[in-house]
Amino acid sequence: MKTISILTLTITAFLLSSFTGCETDVVEPIPEEETIEVSEEENLGLEYMREEEKLARDVYITLFEMYNNTVFNNISKAEQQHMDRILTLLEKYNITDPSLPNVGEFSNTTLQGLYDDLIIQGSESEEAALIVGATIEDLDIKDLNEFKAETTDPEIIKIYNALTCGSRNHMRAFTSRLDSLGLEYVPQFISQEEYDAIISGEGERCGQGG
Image (cartoon, rainbow, N blue to C red):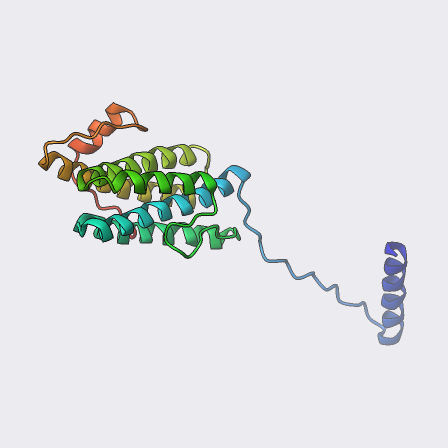
């Protein structure tokens, strides 16, 4: 078929030249729209963080309903902004959004199990709920650091940095309330050194979604 197609085009061009007495114009092909691709690691990272930010939001929504503590309400709204920022990248890179619409439901089975466990822990007391909040931010920072190390894409790095900044602020909010109750949070995922640097630092301006 390829040979016939080329032969047909050649004959057509010759006939047109014969009838018009001039050379035919060369028509440049219309360039296809550029497709932006990401690596498998970047793809998986964005999918995972979209749902991990949802986990944070959903846990805080549920804990606010339990205790009516405004810290959970305020931070759940910030987590929605985090979700939205990840969604912009999913749409940019043509990645299917894995997040489910209902609170407490996840496509990722690991995150589903984590959500269920955290709600059980947080339902024990308001103090336990605040520890759950610090734990989520602790895990969030660790995962964002790891996923950021797997990409060189400036847009992904920019958003991961903003989300990490937001998580540092959230951790300060939870640990401050724990401190007022005479309780101390011990980091489980990031190093003690990184944790101490976060807690001793001032609140940060993280831009939209921070």
